[in-house]
Amino acid sequence: MVGLGRKEGKMASLYAKHNKIYLSIYHNGQRVSKATGLEDNAKNRKLVKNDLLPNMLFNIQTGQIDISPRESRTVEYYAELFLSSKKLLVKESTYVRYESIIRNQILPTFGKREIASLKISEIKKWFNYLIKERSNTTAIYISNTFSAICKEAFYDEEIEKNPFDRIRRPKKTQGGAKPFDVETMKLLISS
Image (cartoon, rainbow, N blue to C red):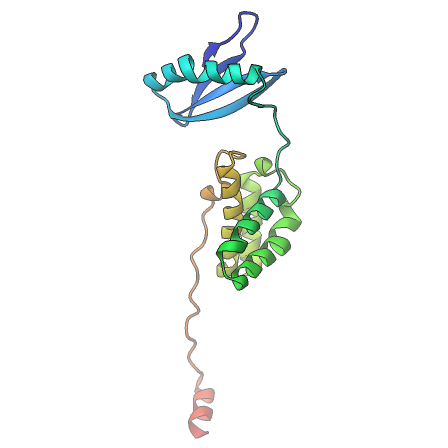
């Protein structure tokens, strides 16, 4: 971590996470982390330290950028965002299915939760319940829908990783043909 800023206390610092450079800025007594999107190397660290960070600090101090922490967003917020984007892109029947899955399967359990507070272990537990109660195909479809909602939060930088990337899903089971028993075959032939 490289400290930068005022002599009376650090106002900002930069650090690396997953080979990317992040800024840690102290504003109104609170720490706010922001991703730069730049790969962590000497050239980019120098660029951030000498150019990007001073400009950002100036813009924060002059009120041109507001980095005040905002209220965390819920699963329901991102579910609505997902649905509004899908409404324009998919057939109505597909949209109705997405909406039904979200309203009946996802929101009752996770709707009011902050999306950043979701733990992989609780999602695995929920998914295992789905597998026991429904067919593999239905459970996979429900989890894929929830994963797409989490992807919206990931793109919005509300979460660092999509928790569904760490969950193994079962393979879809093919409904195999069941041969008729002898009695049924005789009945069909005689008809």
